[in-house]
Structures are given as C-alpha cells and as structure tokens.
Amino acid sequence: MTPLKERLVQLEVLRYYPDTDTEAHFQTYEVVCQEEWVVLDALNKIKADIDPTLNYRWSCHMAVCGSCGMMINGEPKLSCHAFLREYEGVIRVEPLAHFPVERDLVTAPDDFMEKLKRVKPYVIPKEIKPISEGEYKQTPAQLMKFRQYSMCINCMLCYAACPQYGLTPSFIGPAALTLAHRYNQDSRDGGRKERQEVVATHEGVWECTFVGACSEVCPAHVDPASALQQMKITSSIDWIVEHLIPGGKS
Amino acid sequence: MSRRPLVRECPPTSWYFRQPRYLRYMSREITSIFVGAYCVLLVVGLQRLSAGPAAWDGFLLALRSPASVVFQFLALVAAVYHAATWFNATQKAMPLQIGEDFVPGNIISGAHYVAWGVLSVVVLFLAGVF
Image 1: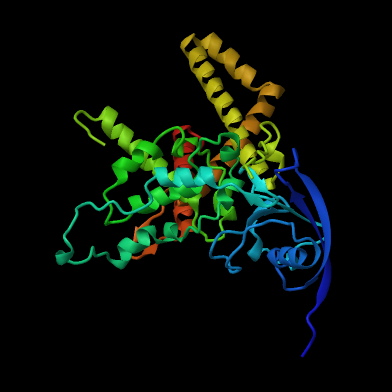
Image 2: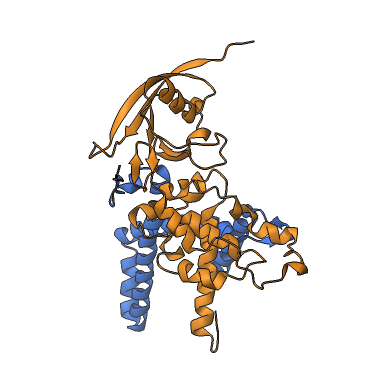
C-alpha cells in the first residue's frame, strides 16, 4: 500500500481567552498533516499534540451538523469541508465574522437563535385536523416548491458572508428569512401573515441589498439570496394590494 | 466564569475590500449613479424642448461636447452592466416551476436578454434609425 502523503502546514489561528485577554491575537502553529486532510483535522491534531487549550466547535466531520463554521483565509467555510490541498502557504483561521467571539474560534450564536425563533420556522397549519382524519398530504410538486430551502443546516456561514448583517446587526439575516420562506411556500402552512410581521419590515427582507454572498458560501446550496428576492416580490404585491386596490386586503 | 464575548466590528468604510465579490457588488451599485445622472440629463432635455427651438438646439450642441460624449459613453457602459446584472438576477427572483421541475435559470435570464434586444430594436425603429 502506498504511504499517504504528508505535508507541513502552517496555521495562523485567532486566539482569545476572555478571562485574561482584552483583544484577540494570532498564534501560529506548524503541524504535519496528511494531504487529504481538512482544516478541522489540522485543528484536531494541534489540540491533541501541540496545544490542548485551543477551542473550537465541531461534531459530525461530514458537512451535516453545521457546527464547525470558521473564516478560513477570510472566507466563511465549514472547516470539515475545507481541504488543505486547496490552500497554499499559511492558512489563516478565524472565528465566523459578524458574531461575538466567545473564546478562540468559538462564537456566540445567540443573536441568530433569537432571530430564528422570531420567524416561526415551523408549520402553522392552515386548518387543524383531528388525527382521525389522517395526515396532511402533499404532492411531489408541492414538496419541490420549498425542498431546497429546507436543506439549511444553521451553520451561519451566510451571516458571516453578509456585509449587511455585519453593518446592521438588527437585520434578521439570510438563513432565518429563508426558513420563513420555506414555511411560507409549504402547502400545509397557513402562517405567512404572522411571519410577514417580521419578514416584510426594514429589519427583514428590505434590509437585504442583494449582495448575494450568502448563496455563494452556503455549503448546502440553499440559495438564501433567491428566497429573499422572492419574498421582496410577494411583500411588494401585498403592499400594492393593501394600499392601491380599493378594498384590497393583503 | 462570566461571559465576556469579544465583538469584532465590521469596518463601515472598507468592508468591500475584504472579498472580490464585495467589490463586484459595489461596482454594480455604483453604476446606478451613472444611470441616475443620465435620467437627470433626459429631464433637462425635456425642459429644454419645452423652452423652444433655440433652447433645444443649444441642448443638442451641448450633448456633442467632448465631456458630454465621454459621460454618455460611461453612462452607456454602466447601464449595460447594470442591466446585465439585473437580468442575471431574474432567475433568482423569479424561479419558474413546471410540475416537479424548475425551468433552468439561464432560460429565464436568456428570455430577458431576448426581450431587451427586441425592445431595443423597436425603440431604434421608432427613433427612425432604420
């Protein structure tokens, strides 16, 4: 069997220890890695062999759980999906941009979690049926209408990529608004009007200026930029119906 | 241990240098300045037209000045770039589902380019170019 290729990798990792530090600083590590490793493997090697104080989040190591999002050379990435072979020279690893740094590469997701709750990301049934009447049925075409938007893994890379969220933190942001769209598009759902109170506001879709970075960095190909532009159109139609058509109700 | 998260601000005047995609976005936004300025020029033209033949001739003469020609060229480039980004965005804003499948995005954007071309020919025809 051919031995696996090894490579000495330099990582420049942002460190912040809240009990003693007032500012963050970079620490450089040199670690021998195998060629097919990802950045997360290199961090695990550092933690195991060089510096056990290094903190970061991870879980599945297969781009499903969404825990290991980091800025890698300035780009929001899942570190389990960032292959070392795609990088040359020193690799700079920072916590996700636009989120407070809890410690080292660990960020505080509280703001995102609060916004997620506000958009009511769950089916609000159009009509409540007793269980005896059976399940809420859906055709494959009705499923396809929202399926793409249900693939979000809440990794928050889109928030780290969105300059609008960085500049205006009150912005509900790409992932939460996309989930609102996902449920609005669901044939079983009747909660659009409730969600519009959050969605069709300045903090909602109208804060989005369509930079499109959210869709470019999304590891699950959800395309939040598409969802938000569609919501702008439906919100505009609501406004026209309500304000310009006599007797119109959105 | 109490929480003391470190907040790293997004630099308000230099964030667009962080990524090429942000520069592309800013270049798209800046084109609107040229498009807006050209709209003002058209309004001024209308005002000159209503002021009589002498004012209109003066306006036409001013349009032929080198500075005006340079501005109009830049406005044309900006408008074309702006229109292209807009048409490319239509596939995101207006996905079309037929049955279980979605119409490919390039067909949606392509239809807009075709409509743009046809309408441009109509406008040129009405202007007596042909």
